Length: 299
Length: 287
Image 1 (cartoon, each protein chain N blue to C red):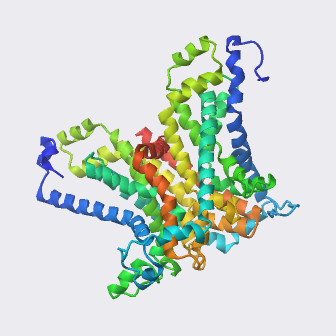
Image 2: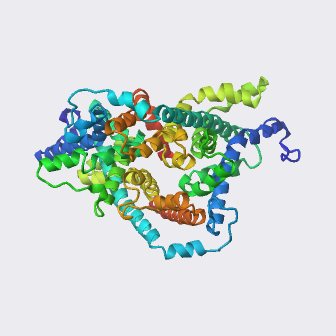
Image 3: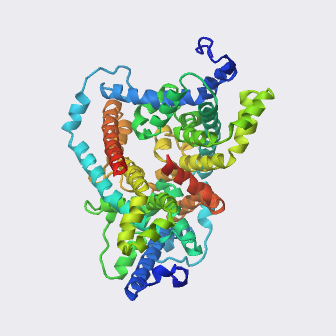
């Protein structure tokens, strides 16, 4: 292409020309639908931007100022943080336990790995319909079993106390298999000799677990927690399908609130501001995690 | 845990207590597995029951009679065929085009020398970390400005390449020995020829992994089709089923039949090619 300048490396001209051409389709799509929207999102958040209106007056940081006084936003942020804090440790610990328990190659371990992995490949929204049904007080089987036991069943998804835990439970059900698979892959790279050496040094089983297994796969553990945190901060599908953020905003999260503002109220500027808060939150968490990576490499 | 498989130095630890713990752990793993699989089993069994049966005895697992009515009704009670076709076109189209564009870009980033190549690669790495929810509002505006809402191109084009796919294939291409394409180049083959008839066939396992990943991701995606489509005619399965699940006219068994059918393609693929699913997921762990 034309911007290949001067005559150095003349023999490579032939393929120097086609490089940008090969890159063009992906570059266009990433440019228009990823890079530009990041900037555009920031730009929109500084305007009183309505989806279908022609003029979008500049209002500076007014959207962000409004967020600070928006109780619904703080509520959504709090729910998202609770969801994340409740989900990530359980997901990583249970994922680790399952990975260790099923790391053998016996037929039943292989079969159980598939069972645990199956929710990962299913559609979250579709399975959330099934879960809503399972937890329903009138036609759900769980309510019917509780009644059989003489317990008055709760309407979990319409309870201001239990709706969020129900949403958390379904999130765990869906994502534990993901953590398990990544940790299984990491466990395979732990050399057998390390564990044997520790046994010879008189290490107990628990010591071997902490000092050999966990330490050897610490990168994978940190990685799965980063992914779990990022995914939890973006929780949407099961909330939208199971509760629509209700009852009374008790399960509303940052992305469901952003969706509501952007696509129900058509307040694009305000929704973009929420998206940017989320973006900064994710970047901050990632930086903290990167620090952890670096520290763990020093020791 | 069978003792004969353990190396001798571990045998000493096989005390009664540790055996008891192993049995308890095993029981918990099985119990959790039952919990994991239960929604799928229940979905399938409920799709075979009648509406009356569901209401009169919701706690019953096994249907009184295996009733396939729901699988017949679904096509008339919902525009289910349309939803299914939309899902195929969207997930299939996005997968095929993305495989082509991803591999072209990966080839450029691994084999071709041009100014800005390193920068381009870093941009790909950086966008790998940007979740699409963040850019959703402006992307919707762009799709709207293009008059692409409620169209296949609106659904597919923004998904027609992925930083993840470019990265995955690039990592694969750099492992292919350069002698192969150097020889072809000496024989006068053009770059596209080398890409198409040497690199792509060699990359078949990586392409299969990526294809499974893209198809699964788009087939299951909910928020994206929910935002880009609003007419019933253009909804995909997850968004369409969710929409109909809120309406009382739809019978529960019919809804569960719809959920079962929409899960079937991935379940079948998973049954026959599980390792591509696992590889696709595990690779996200490597990046």
